[in-house]
Length: 232
Image (cartoon, rainbow, N blue to C red):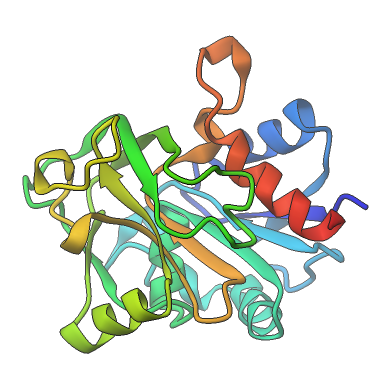
């Protein structure tokens, strides 16, 4: 049975409708918007924290959104094993909420970066990556000013040993090198999960590359993976 999706809407979210459109119109999934002032997740089985500039990115990106009433429910849902995907600003919110380790700093160029990037998938046996073949390189767009992932040495070692690093920036051939790093992120990290693997935060936007009309559909592999994890 296909799961029911919930897309959280914060003041300043601008990718909420992108996520809704893809889930509803492209995949024909059951999906609802979840307003930040509410606490009811409307029986959602997968929560999407979308990209944007929640609360205008005041203080730090995601730092105010983390205290929205809906986030108390999201945190409880995630801690009980619920599936949560945070995209771009959603990734930032997951870090601020303590659901994922580390921080996202300003891009090392100090400029907003908007372009397609290539991602090497490090772990294909997960809720979010089971539809991705080994050595399959995804082409997915980014659009952020604070995507420079950083964590202390202990945290990085833990992420690597537990295979919590799901995506790294790479060449189109899958070569992971700083040459292909768009923001200075440590070890080219583009997306990480928690230890249980039910929470994923990633800077690239899979919802922006699912519609065949746009000429790129690699993002479907992430959403199809989520569906597979419920069906199988």
